[in-house]
Length: 273
Image (tube, rainbow, N blue to C red; front, side):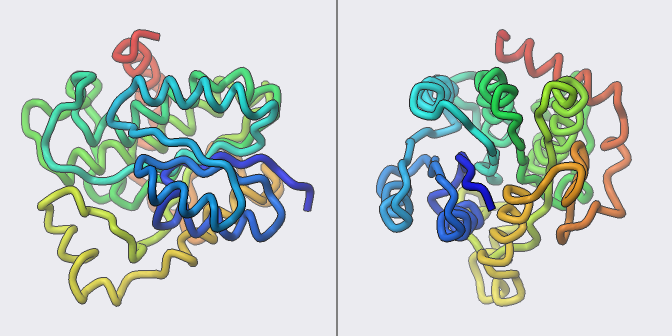
């Protein structure tokens, strides 16, 4: 397989780190991106890869990250927007709900800033979504940050639904220019997920119940499969995958083209693009 330059955000831990190890072992040039300097550099050193530090809770760090990536990598064959999580209620320094910003606005901004390079590279853009989009998601374009009735699981589900809608709209807008976008659910993975919230999901990921979860290596392999795959052959651009297959059951809003366009436009407005 031809070596690719693969940028993975949220690669200091969990499925991002697992996939980074798998892809590096397969001979790819992996770029490790994370928010924790020590953990990020440790993963990068382990696999002999470069790393970049960015906390998606601050959009200026996302902008700086984009500048660093454009300066360092003439090609970006894969952008894996994997960073994310579920957080307690709170507003970032940019004025947005933290879950909404970290999971949706930050990767939206990063992808926007890298679009020309991604088009030139005929890149694959991968969004790590979640079954939470189906379980908890229901987007209202007039209240994307759930200001009327904020709940951690609703904020998370909405942001993961936004990831899928963003994927579909990115494909619609830039697919004919060479970008291939795809979203996926990695499974219930035994990671540090929900570490920053008091939501009941924390009980699953940080108690003995985690023994029922899937390994990070298995979750990471699903990201690896997409990164190494051939769009149009291995997987279909614009789709949402579970277990390396197009998901059979999705949130009905996933197929709402007007909502996907509206989310894109509203996101541009919020970011001042």
